[in-house]
Amino acid sequence: MLTILGFAMIATFLVLIMTKKMSPIAALVLIPALFCVAVGQGAQLGDYVIEGVGNLAPTAAMLMFAIVYFGVMIDVGLFDPIVRGILKFCQADPMRIVVGTAVLAAIVSLDGDGSTTFMITVSAMYPLYKRLKMSLVVMTGVAATANGVMNTLPWGGPTARAATALKLDASEIFVPMIPALAMGLLAVFVLAYVLGIRERKRLGMLTLDEALAREPRPEAETVSAGTGGTGGKDRLRKGAAASVSASGTGTGSGASASAGGTENEDADDDAFQGLDPNRPTLRPKLYWFNAGLTAALLTAMIMELLPIPVLFLLGAALALTVNFPHMPDQRARIAAHADNVLNVSGMVFAAAVFTGVLTGTGMVEHMADWVVGTVPDAMGPHMAIVTGLLSLPLTYFMSNDGFYFGVLPVLAEAGAAHGVSPVEIARASLAGQALHMSSPLVPAVYVLVGMAKVEFGDHTRFTVKWAVLTSLVVLAAGILFGIM
Image 1 (cartoon, one colour):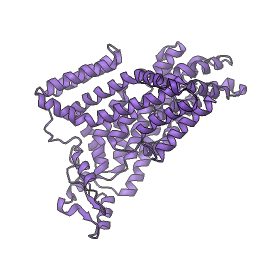
Image 2 (tube, helix red, strand yellow):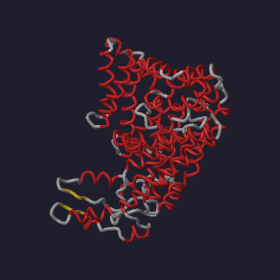
Image 3 (cartoon, one colour):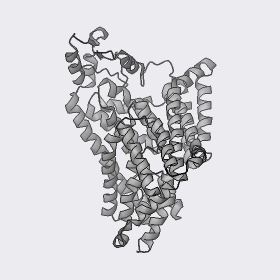
Image 4 (cartoon, one colour):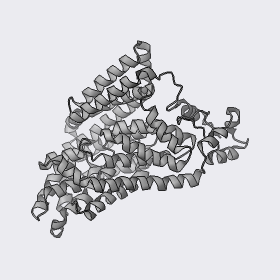
């Protein structure tokens, strides 16, 4: 019964958010509360929620201070040179912009933190996507999938968990997987190219110089009902209204194509200045201090000198104090990033209700046992492949901790009975990470969709199929190269 109710709870949640019948934060709270009562454990709901909040509180703290820290680093111009290089390659070509998104997300993912990757990638690429009227779910989908492949780095989490759960060395798991992961990353770049070509066909293509030369004047951009609105929209679709500065910042006013008035939305777009080269928060004289502080912070994260939430708390405090020594300026920077902090931390604590109920009621355990029990005995000699296939849905529907510490040992034991080594099982378990990064149970994905102003349901509908395909490429490459 718990197995059925567990799957029903997850399915109900996904259907409601994908059809936009409920907001993610409301669904994360109300759906598990309802199912907790349905299984007859309503009296324990408070305990489950408190336990879930306790487990995710460090993650919420890490995200809160990471958003502030990297927000400040973006404000002061730390990432401008990297972004300028990517955007110089992108020009105003939709295909190059999508490929540039994948490249930037993959590079920044080397730090092992999804939230960092998404904050930097969205901050850099969002202005281009908005000004050229490109699909924002393409940006979130490509960024999430690229980060999912790179999430398999030993300091990213899954590899370390697999090594710990099966008492193996992380390098023994990861190093042989490099060719398969490289194929997965190549698949992401190919996907970005295909999606970029599709966007180019939909929107047309301009070079950067053409985009600047054809930038419409503010007074010519307002298109109201009954005054040639259709023509204005057509011009936007062809990219004629695109306005991109040399550093990738949208500099023109947003177009207002309204029948009922969308001025507020356009004003919001205009307010998002991205990496404006003239923003007053730039601190060029402190560039090397900020670069050194960020390098030290990432090094400390990799070496695990202190818990990550503590590192970001210290880093955010130091970055604010040095770059903005005056209290009003510090308050202004905190206020500027408060919206993202509140949205993300609120979503994480809402997710704590979902995970708390899923774990506390025993649903996760019963679901995992049922899935493992459905594997036929004849598949025993192929348990590595089975593990790889199971890693897709299981890491999507449960946390990495739940899968690697709860399910993986059972799969490894079943494989060992048929002569399959634990290290092969561990490698195969990494295949589903491209899909995992778009799971509603991953806090970082809310940073991505929140900053990109994309509905989580829209992101899920668009991304899941491509993430599944990428995961299957990693699995197939692993089998082809004899890694598993």
